[in-house]
Amino acid sequence: MISAPVLDTRFRLSESVAVELAKIYGTPLYVVDEAHLRSRIRNYVSAFRNAYARSEISLASKANSTLALIKIAYQEGCCIDVASEGEFRAALAAGVPGNKCHLHGNNKQIEELEFALAHGIGHIVADSFEEIEVLNVLLNDEQRKSTLIVLRLAPGVDPVTHSKISTGQADTKFGFNIADGSAEKAAARCLELGFNLYGFHCHVGSQLLDPEAQRSGGELIAKFAIEMSERHGYKAKYLNVGGGLGVSYTSKDQPMGMDDYCRLIVQTVLGALEGSGIDSVLGQEPGRSLVGESGVTLYRVGVIKTVPSKTAGHRTYVAVDGGLSDNPRPALYGSKYTVERVAPCFGHESESRTVTVSGKHCETDKLFEDVELPSDIAVGDLLQVLCTGAYNSSMASNYNRYQRPATVLLRENGTHTIIQRRDSWEEMIARDIMPDDLT
Ligand code: PLP
Image (spheres, rainbow, N blue to C red):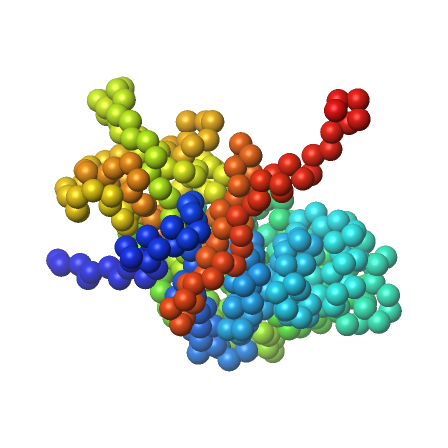
């Protein structure tokens, strides 16, 4: 059987633009394409809306909280999901009204909740009994009526993904377990306290290529909503199935299309709710599937070294000028990426060979292990790593006191502009305070 050619939906730079950007802004460099990003977001928003008119997409801003990207998502019709006061501040700074944001977090600090309430957060996703009691103290009479509270539920679903991004199983720090009665207790307590309980939420995991876990999570929270209606006379106005739709880090990753995925979620949840009299808004809060494929990271090759290897006979390391500090995902999750040469210094495309692209940090960081690059790969060549728009700039650190890379936005009109600058050397030591007796 001939299988259909796989559609590659990822943004990639042309050689001329890559060379120009590297020359102007230096490397490593995150690059995001505005047209690609807007079209991803538009497609997702309209896929969900076409499947169900009363739907709402929020950008999980943990994936990328650069102000310009938050603003673009908002302009394209998204609300903004924030997981901390810092992310909420970023959304506000981007010009998003507080009531278009919602706040997550399994251990929200009192100050974070106070800040959220003071800035009119759209809704708070409560995650623990402690948080409910803190809210009971913080909410004044007016806020008790006006502040929407959503309960994060742990539906007890085990998705097929890396254990560190799997969150819907029973053994999780997030949310209220449905099966052991915690979720019902939490809902009853919110109603008893006179909270404006808006509905229920679950997020079962990330980078899911098989949608069964989200389908099952959606079904379970819908069934839970029916139980709350039958047992407590409470009708949920909002059900959110979280994020999690996968992206194509490599061509082996073939996530379900947005249209099919949204139809599946809507059919599942509405199917489960049928006849219950519950008529709720449906929410999703994707991160990587909105911003991941629109971004690439540009690196320059600095060293090439071939060494003996016990397993492979020999291994060629191609060292680039970034690494763990601008992309910790390979070290954290064993993530694989697509690496391409964009601008050869010498020669032209030749046969490929398997190499390991390493970073410049102090550990043996096999950044991108066993990738195919042209066999004439040379010092000075530019590499682009695809699908790095999500969880790269937002997870970057100053490890080894390297400056975090800048992010450049390729505008729809063909120009480019910097939207997050590289750390300055002054900033690298600005937080340090030398005690007087050590000066
Ligand atoms: N919502 C919640 C509560 C999350 O924890 C996450 C990711 O960790 C997301 C949404 C976004 O997930 P993804 O980027 O896989 O869509």
